[in-house]
Length: 136
Image (cartoon, rainbow, N blue to C red; front, top):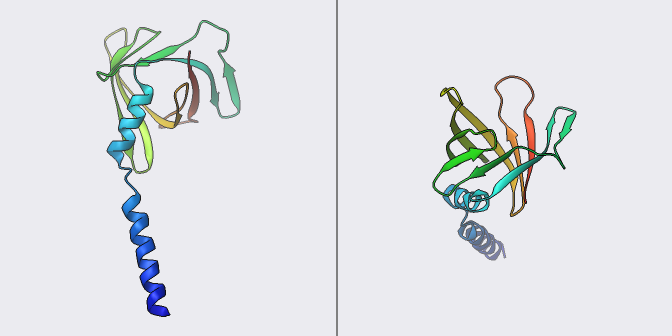
């Protein structure tokens, strides 16, 4: 009976490990396909306990293009990449300001779907800001 139990347990563990096909590459490909070629409009942001709503206003938007470039409503352009570090999916954005100065911004991807995107802006000091976008 113990041998049968061990064999069954081994088969179950092997099957569970063999069926997990998700890799960081697969995850980034899926995230990229959901992010790209859409205008993501900022609906609201939350920093700590402070919420700021942009619903119903002429608002900020960002577009991530399939060729790895990005642009936003403030006129900033640059490049981006989706990466998985540890278990955290991130968007790494390299921008140039209007004055030509380089700027790097890193966002943790909290969730992404066909019409909703939630990012957390990574900051070295202070409280991170969560950004809630919709694709209209």
